[in-house]
Image 1 (cartoon, rainbow, N blue to C red):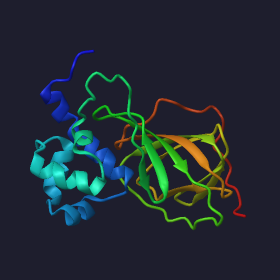
Image 2 (cartoon, one colour):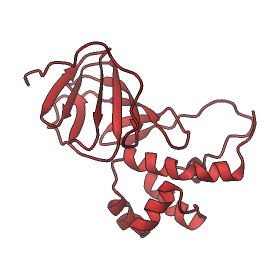
Image 3 (cartoon, helix red, strand yellow):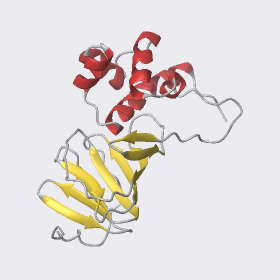
Length: 201
């Protein structure tokens, strides 16, 4: 397998940083306040207009709680296995399934079982999201719609709309998520009509 050049490794840092920040639900303003790095510098770093340096990457690695090697995509020499490192956010687990720069990023998401249902707290951010329910019953709130998706159902939506994901019945939910920048949509489409709004229980 051909090794990536230094330029290719550095070019992949920006999209990796953006994916980490969005998976954790952190804004550029919040990240700037935590690291002391200006918002404009962070924005240029994520877009590839600013070359990463050790001075910039060290505080980001501390905030995200990942090894510095993960930010620069350093490979494990001689080890062909893919080491998936879960990310925990809001009590949910995200397992990154893709690491390529730009385009769409794939995650497996696990929503743990809860004895008491959570009250939805919708959020917004830039991008477009596609999801597919593997196990459990997903409660998906998008804008004014409150949906319940059983295993095998999929949904996609603009993340500029207020949205929230949780368990519909308190059980564990497992799903696949594809996340892309604004305008980048999945080519997968379902032939079934959109799920009906279900009354809250």
